[in-house]
Amino acid sequence: MTPTTSSGTATGFAADPAVLVLEDGTRYAGRAYGAVGTTLGEVVFATGMTGYQETLTDPSYAGQIVLQTAPHIGNTGMNGEDSESRRIWVAGYIVRDPSRVVSNWRADGSLDDALVRDGIVGISGVDTRAVTRRIRAEGSMRGGVFSGPAAQLDPEEQLRLVQDAPAMAGRNLSAEVSVPAAAFTEAVADSPGERIGTLAVLDLGIKQATVDNLAARGFDVHVLPQSATFDDIRALDPVAVFYSNGPGDPAASDDHVTLLRTVLDEGLPFFGICFGNQLLGRALGLGTYKLPFGHRGINQPVLDKATGRVEITAHNHGFAVDAPIEGTVDSPHGYGRVEVSHVGLNDQVVEGLRALDIPAFSVQYHPEAAAGPHDANYLFDRFAAMVKENRA
Image 1 (tube, rainbow, N blue to C red):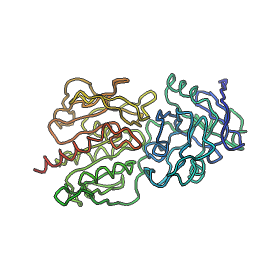
Image 2: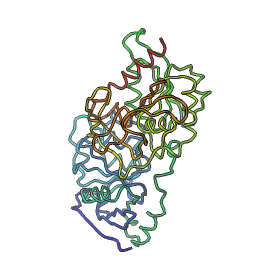
Image 3: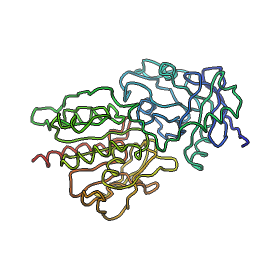
């Protein structure tokens, strides 16, 4: 294989050379950004023009080298309020023009310092448009960022390391991002009468904005580690169960599917987002598959079939549920009728499921949508209404 090379204008901070290597042998030269060293992962692109802090701290990006299609990154620095979890989770970071200064009154640090602190190897000065076009044409692929001394490795050795790295298909990453112990957030409803009850949340890579939105609807939110059993859930005496977003292949999460089937068998209301949507699909007996390059960004149009309303939504997923867009299907696992509730308008991908005979639904995107948009925030209200109706 003869590697091809593409380079952009290096405008990063560090003088260390760096190179991005894709598994097809394509190479992109640049400069080190963040920590210096070697990192491997699935190279994906995110189209958000804002909210890079929320993207970087979203656990769903674990195992992935994220490319920002927006050319200027780091302008607003980092702050202590907008992080969605306890650290930066991306495997690596690719930007074109990192900001040389931080210009925001809320900032308490720079992006490059945060990348160094969390050991995130990145690259700047790359022609990100060229990389994006290649991924769109060829599909997401494994890649590696090599900076500092690692950039001087033999190109064939770099390529071998990339090609030997694990593919995203078949990977279970929930244990890497989930909380190590249960955590509790009290409902923040304005009056005691608005409290709905205890909600059991399985953390597969949850974002803080999700917890905040659930608590704001009157749920006492108990976030459980991904290893939780049904006995752990039952001990809480919950009024409902929630599955969060998270990284990895849903086909590699059999234990979470088995747990969810027990939840459905017990008649507990269920809401899942992103990874939780895929696991609901599997629990109902539907299949999942890997998308060519996935949906990642905050500008994805989705049709809510119940209302006919088109929402602009935030996405981060590389897998999807395999189900017919129109009509209903009978759950192969005996849970009654199921319909696709939401559809992605760019490529007709399933973006939501609704069970018609049991209290369960899910969406493939982020209704908490930090840093935005907020078109789909109503889904938390829909969940609260479903739980209240089921309790009554």
